[in-house]
Image (cartoon, rainbow, N blue to C red; front, side, top):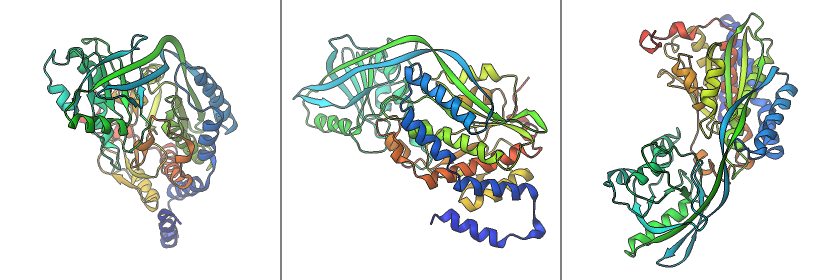
Length: 462
């Protein structure tokens, strides 16, 4: 029996009818419904099996679009529609790498999203090894001429996933920084917390001021191998072959709503991203995130028509950074009361951050009481955002809430072939759904105005 179920029963026994609050009572009913509701798990199970990996711009992404439309309609969402937007699709081809000296050794690698290809014969060179990304940045211009830069800094495990954010520049900006110093290719240890021979991909961002060089991620095991070889003193040479293609394409954000009965123009916005990387089935990134948003909206609406509209957006191209500006452009005129995106896997929620100024609001005190039995606490520190796809709207002044989930295991599998359905624990997934559902219900069935609560310093200027 999970600890939050035990605590939930204890709190229920202590509740007094004399202090009954209709909003709290209904939110507790939503919470309890979500804890037992199969909607979220069914969503991610069906997506994983019937669609699988869905790289933006691929044929599978179109199948995912059609599947998502049908799924939202089957769950009773109204106004289900598709919003297309243009992207530059990056499609992976054959990839391989090997150590050629001091002795042959195959390497497990995966190209970074957006990488330029190597020539057909590949690129070969002596490596310049850096044990930290900071060491690479300290290298002078021209010092890597003709070499393959390799960064082997490990990523620390953390409940809040902060190790990923700290090391993300090594993947995102590393190729351009290496090229600026003369490197002909770039390899980075996978941004991963597990010890596996499965490499983890992810997008890079070429900088206009540097040449574009091919770039890939090494498996953790092979990055360790290179460290051990380098300790023996002999020069190391690597041959890298990457094939890829880019082409104009269309991506789609799929949306559905439970319309508000009293204030349909006021929107409580939930979401997750529909696209995924290609090596796994995209079950935790971000099948689970979509499932949490869909399951939460479904559980909240099951309590009765909400006063405000609850809308779910399934963003069509998050991994390659296209969905954020497209969604902001399409919805800049919407009256979005509050926005949140789920994109940190399927494990249990443990903390919620509210829009600035909302912590002391009576409605949010009610929310804190509702989720306390789930072993979730509401932080007094305000949210600084809630997912990549919502960031432009948040910068424009839309209030955001953020649910922190336990990311201790998430980066063992994130962006790799190990991102599969078997990693999802139903009870933990439903606990996260319950955390989101209670918030969505209270935000949609109260008059709370998050914009008005924000301190003057937190509001956008004229």
